[in-house]
Image 1 (cartoon, rainbow, N blue to C red):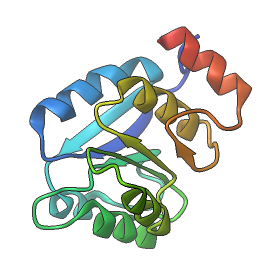
Image 2 (image 1 turned 180 degrees about the vertical axis):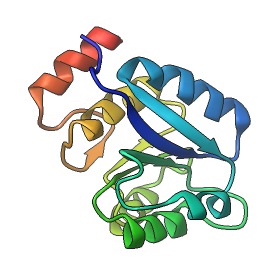
Image 3 (image 1 turned 90 degrees about the vertical axis):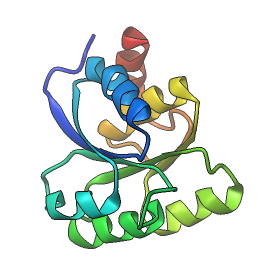
Image 4 (image 1 turned 90 degrees about the horizontal axis):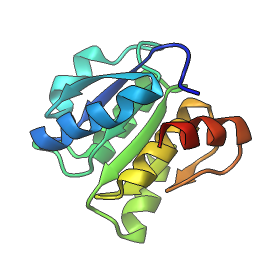
Length: 145
């Protein structure tokens, strides 16, 4: 069972191949992504309710993903933020959560990325690589993977 309605996300990652890969991987979940290279490019697009999910890398040119996450939450506090980054220390994960992020997946964990995105789109709790709460989301993700 695939997602029934198209949802919109904003992906900010400085690596073009990562942006392309994530867009392709998440399309079957019903998530259409706007992809950008920097946090500065993202700022003018952030509005309450415009996106269902933000996916952010920690290491971005000019502005860290942590700073971007704080700015997103100040403008659009209800929308979910997921970090997908190679920065995988416990301190990074805790810092992301303190900025208001709802999840964190360490690159290159693609299975964790897909399952965490599915959960966050179903409005689960803070997630670190995987499901926490919603059995219906788990069934949908299993059908996609």
